[in-house]
Image (cartoon, rainbow, N blue to C red; front, side):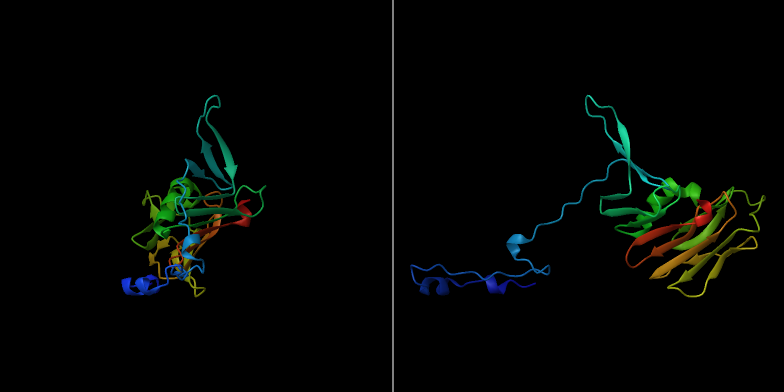
Length: 212
């Protein structure tokens, strides 16, 4: 944006009547507000927290005379992230949507706390590395349950297999909405869909109704 409208030459100032002060025009910002009304939004640092299937557990530090405690939250904005839980408050597994600086950082946060709920078998879990979605089996000699199915579609298109009849076929995430479908025997996973929007930098975990 150019601010040439605010520049007044010395000659122009000198020719102005002594009783008058040159008025400066108000330059609008992209927000539509005058310069004097535009305030930079501060990013609140994140407290210590844990993502759980039904809520966000936020740790409240000890503050004399109160010891450390915790509280459950459905919504949290901090560190450039927005965490939001929706659905029935009385269900153990709820939909979780997180937006932030990048979907990779969101996935890292989610898997740190929720990896247990993303298993496709007792020793196999969904993994994303270098934009590749696959299934990691810790003990290949044991194998994976033949009933476990994992697939992915792009922008509502055809569902392609990632895990089917024990065969693993890694797929690469694309630019846009990537929907990962999970059909896994209980109790290994609690989510039916994982929607990864690589453009808007959001990840949504859609709870499997049967897991509740």
